[in-house]
Image 1: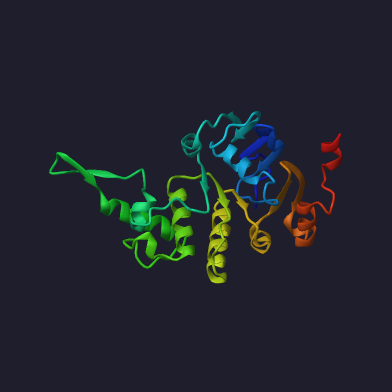
Image 2: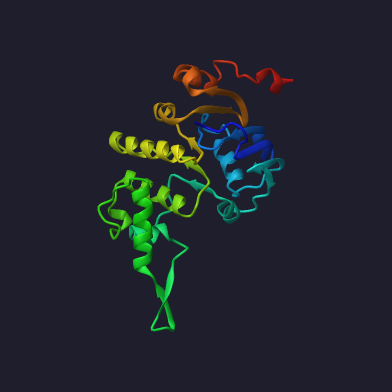
Length: 260
């Protein structure tokens, strides 16, 4: 069960402008522990800008972000990582020429002393630790010594998720996690989302694949032209209603408020 007592992440009145364009307009949103939330909207709705504000890529022009009930200022992506906010973009940020365990420790490599003097990479430690996190998430790859470029799209997605969990991600943002994957691999990634949720990790999913979002999300937040125009409990709505809200053929919950 999702604990609804206190949100892990809350954004209040977030606004982000680029010149004369308001990309995110007075946005409010809460995400609770273990909850999967689909962030939906057409191209240009403001979804990517909002997650880049949360992950420290952009600075909001107005509004506040709260994490674990406390106000936080996320000045850059490294600060987001330090408090446990991990974003997995479509490109996954994996080094294709390195193997699986080297990617899990990418930028945070473990060293050991050789002959008591020289520091060298501790391959055995990184391999064993990587195996532990993949086993924890029930992820199967042919070999942790294989280079990333030899893996399938779903396996790469799983490695990127494993890296986040190993480094103690408390909150995940996933941008189009099933894009360009086959049906079988989509299912594996969505099963992994469910497993993380069951372990208490809340997740925001941005996706144009409504079927995928409906299969894993507890709640849907719908944006249009930079504004949150509706929220729906997934089990109490339909893809047709959500599409209508996204494109504007159905009125949003906040349209009257936004237009006043």
